Figure: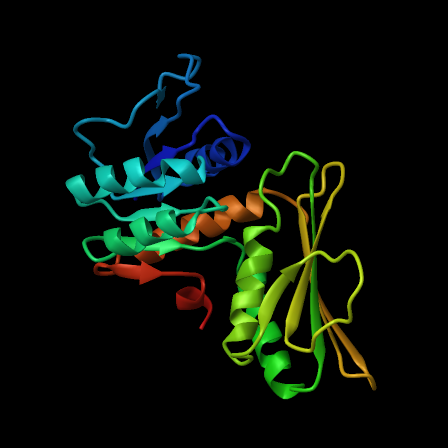
Length: 244
């Protein structure tokens, strides 16, 4: 599988390239990044004008999604969007592009998180009288808060709690409303990522937790997503398409 990596100079892009180089089944066509300095001749500042690629994997920044997907649509290349923090307008760009090409979009590329999201949805359905809180912890350099994964978990819960609404943090006076899904963000040191869903109905507490121990799992998940995506037609896909 021939791959273009967008965001090649970032931590995740570099990890992805390392995994591509170690795999005989994958080939790096090139990496693109605005910070490219020529240290690695395979990494350029701009996407190639005549790409020979099966898929693009994006680990850059959410603001690049319009330009990236415009390029992918023009060249008919499937795209894996592995960034987070997209605005509603950017999400609409992703949806429009998926009408022309296969697009894989997930706030988290971990198979374990996909399983956690499914468990959380199922638990919320089985405990309809339980209050639900989500706690997410990441390293102190993470820009978006709450994390895209925390929002993904809340969205999965809302599938069986149609009246639920997310509340990010709490302060001041006022009782908790039952329909709230509280999301709390911690930023500490070098934590790769930890997400906990807590359900409590007053009689018992159920706690579901996923801990990412290495960033390499996100690169591995992105490669799995790419392998899945190149076999699909135009449409919008996520991790549920792989684990369900």
